[in-house]
Structures are given as C-alpha cells and as structure tokens.
Amino acid sequence: MSANFGSPAHAGIQDHANGTLRNGQLLPPAPASRRRWARVLDAVFVLALTALIATAALSLEGAGVVSIDAATAAALISYPFALLVFGALYGCTVSPGQALTGVVSLQKDLGRRVGFGRGMGRYLAVGFFPIVIVLVIWTILDAPTIDTVPIRVYRRVPQTR
Image 1 (cartoon, rainbow, N blue to C red):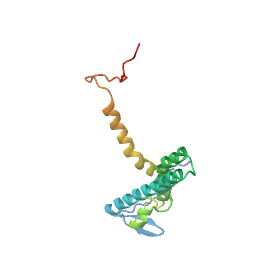
Image 2: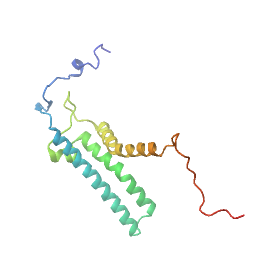
Image 3: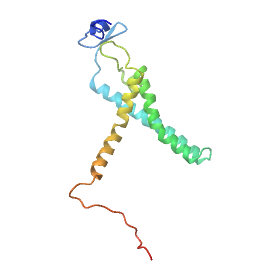
Image 4: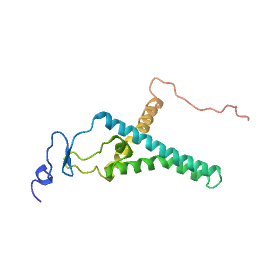
C-alpha cells in the first residue's frame, strides 16, 4: 500500500473554487433558496406518499379486504418507506424536489452522485429528527426532579373489604 493512499493526488480530486466538474462541465453551486425549496418539496412528496399509502390501507380495512392490524401496520410503515424511497432517489439519481428546482446534489471533489446508502441515511436522519427532538423534550419535561412532589396513581373507587 502506498504512503499517499487516500490523498487528493491519489484519488484524482481536483480543487474547483466555484463548483464541481460533472461530465466535463463546471457546475456552479446552487443558491440557498433553491436548495431549501428542493427540500421542502421533497418533504411534501414524502408526506403525500405516506398519506396515500395510509389512506389506501385504511380504506381497504373499511371495505373488509384487510384486517385492522394489517392496515395499521401499513399506515405506520409508510413514512419510513417513503423516506427510504426518496432517499434512494436523492442518492442515486435526482429527487423530485431537486428536479423541479433544477438542482442536483453531487460530491464536491469528484462530481459523483451522493450514493445509495448516504442518501437514504440522510433522509432517515432528517425525517426522524423532529420525532427525536419531541421525545427528548418530552423526556426532560416528564423526568422527576429534586424539588417536585412524587406522583402516584390511585384507584378512583376505594377498595371494599
């Protein structure tokens, strides 16, 4: 193994101050507003696909085609599924939000796509971040502290002997 394994000279990385090369063309950086709108549109598409799958599953349950357990499972798994699908699109090709806003996410130095795993990981992290924040806040607010009175749960009706 050579001493410069992984160095920019070995990997063929070139420094382009104002963009990256893709198919021999220098692509300039996208404006921040277009990047934000691409993410907002992707979030809308993820939520729309989730709502479509959940609605279809619950409609099939209402028609008696599937059980309530199967419909609930399909409705709950639809959000992570949509995140994975759009993450794969983001990593390997272009997401719908990027296509509509005219931007593309590429590796800065090599001009290659982000990649399958990295795209899906990014979408899962961004998709579940709000849920994690809510759970952390809930845990902090629900945690007992030194100066609070302990809480107990009692029966409403006294026991009869």
